[in-house]
Length: 408
Image (cartoon, rainbow, N blue to C red; front, side, top):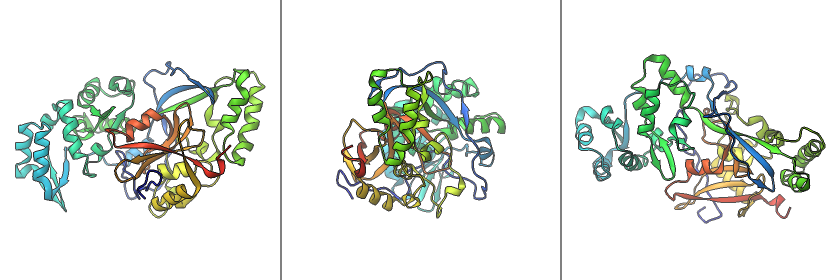
């Protein structure tokens, strides 16, 4: 399926860092910890729209401690994976990208490379990697991004606000480590990203600080949305926006909005209360092991297609069946989007749908960024999602609306 309206869902979308878990993990994840926001007193200025007025309060989630305690520490040895058959050409391209000669000479030494199956692994000198110029790092990692085994380069930490110092504010890491992360961050398209956890892990002071670093790197920036219903002249329009969806959604939302509009406590209502039952239950949480079906974990497509479902449909774990359901039950739409519309991130070249999320309001989406246990369900800005998945002109967003809701 390669036309502009027929995306194909890959069976396993690219994961983010820390995507693998010990084989013996036997209990579901506990409630996530809320980490401090860069400045909890700051609110994003709300915009008015058909949804009313929505305030955005950013904060961070970090993976539960018991899970991190059972995970192995990331290998502090820096490793770059390439296809063995084209290792020479890769080195030539990285040299043209500005990779310093001392690194090239080092990884040309037999002691600094290894063959694993059909892949060659380079072991560059850490000191030289730490000192790479940001533009050179971006160009070299653009080459290494072609090989999925370079997990942290394929799926880097995206610093959505573009400020490393604010992103890690209050996280407890030593200032020296935060400064190092700042210096090693680079631009991937419009986003500021970081891909060198192994390099920083090699500089921690003992196991406790290593575990702390692991925890910090699982943090996910999300939002609490507060709806303000004080504008009585637009209540019908606001109720119409949030009441959009199947009949079961209407039965749940309309009485709540009506009652709230008639009380004194109608300002800054948590939008989580307006979501359908399933996303309301999943929001700000991590998957449970009981959700794994035939070895597959819920991903972004499962999340999007099940948004209005009271009981999740497990067949959406299969990329082909998820794509078929989208084509059978949804119709392409253009912005402005409505509450509950699916936003599918489509590759420009082959038409793969490599991410999807659900439009909520005010350019905020409900999403799960990765098929793994350490990717929670969150609310994020659409711009955050673009920085994560759309960079360097690699794709576009196509909106879809359930056919049953067309014309409403």
